[in-house]
Amino acid sequence: MAPKRFLFAMLLAAAAPPATASFFQDYLVDPGDGMLDASRYLSEVPMGFLPVPTIISEPAVGYGLGIGALFFHESEEQRNQRTDAGVLLPENISVAGLGATENGTWVAALGHMGFWREDSLRYRGLVAYGSVFLEFYSLPGVGELPSPVELKMDGPFVFQDLKWRIPGSSVFIGARQLYGSIETRLASSDETALLTPQASEYAVDAFNNSTTTSGIGALVEFDSRDNPFNPQTGYYYFVNYTVFDGSIGSDVDYQSFEITGLNYWPLGDRFNFGLRLEVDGVNSDEEARLPPYVPPYIKLRGVPASRYQGNRVAVAEIQLDYRIDERWKVGVFTGTGRAADSFSALSDAEAINSYGAGFRYLIARRYGFAMGLDVARSKVDTAVYIQAGSNW
Image 1 (tube, rainbow, N blue to C red):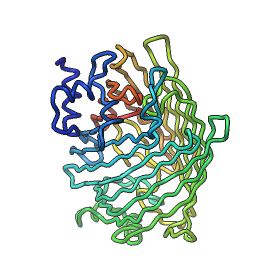
Image 2 (image 1 turned 45 degrees about the horizontal axis):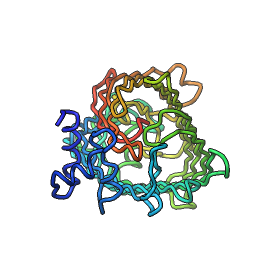
Image 3 (image 1 turned 45 degrees about the vertical axis):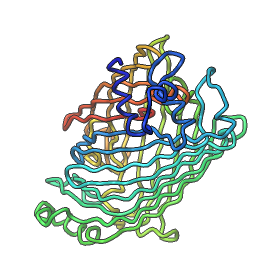
């Protein structure tokens, strides 16, 4: 077996029942090109799932290991549907995952995506519980700290949204719900010495207790991508505004917003160019003691989570992919982001840059689903990511 096929055979081995050569040939080899492919296995084998092993190298939490399982659910009509003309959007996708890192962080999660009524109704939901050790370089209302402090955050988190397609269009409107009950405390008593007097005052209110954040929001989405799992052409624009308020169970009152634009353009037969633009923000009363994990941060491959936070965050990222053949492609990417307390201050904020390269393999042609690996670098660290699905 060729090295490339052997690599993905190992990834699927954990999910496959005791397999004979016949089983492998029937369910894990595409008869069209003779390459490793999990499409029939996922659609026809009861409880068949795609394992997603992860070597965690997120700079914010250190090295670790994780494992996820993706289940693709089809209706009887879809199961009998051929996909020669294009990819199939399954009726439902479920995911389960568990991961842990060297600094004591661990997270377990269950998620679900639904594409119902011929994709006129879309649902996403996630339930997670974990214990996360994370360094923060600034605190809401306090600003930059002279040295980062490590916080331990424990508790559940729930996210879900439901979107309805405006008939005959690529526009969806919907609602979103977010809930968390997170206990935040200093990772060790030694961290207290790193706090300024103002930060120590903040710590009395925000640390060593559980804070509930509960929000409900409205969203508008435009999605003309040819495939949400591995887009090659089309556009995805998303606007969301969420209100967190005591009337719906939140201990702190604030509002968050997100504006995202993803653009994909084919450049000839082999190249594909992608552009990501994103703006995130929070609004609150000056007296509100927001939990340290609430303000958005710069989200770029290679940049540690929570390293650069602000009430306003803007990010731009580009990616250029080269398709070697129908299965394999390689790509390079670079991005930049800024974080500040206001839009007017963004132009003067430090530009945080990252760059990297990676590859993808089309592991399930039926769904257009690809897996691969990225290596990314910023001025503070280098990270490796095992990717499943779209880059963004």
